[in-house]
Length: 326
Ligand code: SAM
Ligand code: SF4
Image 1 (cartoon, rainbow, N blue to C red):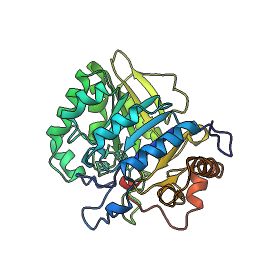
Image 2 (image 1 turned 45 degrees about the vertical axis):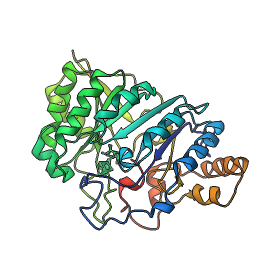
Image 3 (image 1 turned 60 degrees about the horizontal axis):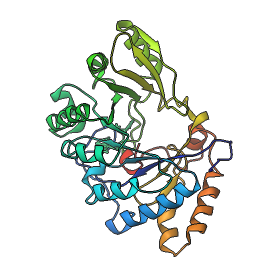
């Protein structure tokens, strides 16, 4: 079992398989001037697979594949197949922008992928374009429809942003009326790949909840253990909603997750910019046992919460979320 220095059991790894992306969501990446990691510095799929085996032997049982956009990396489906066979990995979930995913839904289903989080910040084609800077709305909606037809659990991630998509909040709740989908409203965070801090404070989770409650009767659901979202059931709806206080950080006390970046940096908190490079460790010839020991050591020096981690940084948050995985 992997336990951190605050007594929290760590069983969840978020693996960012690439920092590349075909969209340019303005809250995540600048339009241009992005410095992608050199290909040779990215973890190979073989390296990821080895790390997964070691991490699962140490207690990681839940995996999320994220990025950048996971489906832009060649070989991702073969990797998912291998990952699904690793002993100890009990569930695999995927976060995707949905632009290339529609054709892959049946294969994802047959691999036993538990859930797909589809990032969709607007139900309006023009607003979608303004946010993502790309004309891919129809492809994302096709993915959404295919997912609904499959047995994969579907969640929508919507980052709530002043002046961008506030008019989409209520239509997103409406989407849960007849569809078995969980819509998650996420506070904007300052991980946008620029020095600008964005509008993170304008729509805190409390305001999102108040806004939705004006129109919908909500029943509080029992949140699963380690949930980052506060979950609600709109009365009479097939689906549900969740609100994620990603910026106000109210869930750190039960955080069970670690992150591996595309270049192999293990980050024990989203807001921390320090980490041990497991790619270098692998490439230096370290044994599985040495890597497992380093994992335990790193997890044993975790910041108590996102505010402490942010304080320990030597700079302000400015990296793109695509380099961390969300
Ligand atoms: N490309 C995939 C996607 O968009 O779903 C996976 C990677 S993306 C970095 C993972 C999640 O992080 C997405 O749901 C995205 O909306 C979220 N995200 C990115 N930047 C964010 C920010 N500044 N604040 C809050 N959420 C953010
Ligand atoms: Fe790409 Fe996802 Fe970032 Fe949008 S949020 S730019 S889709 S990595």
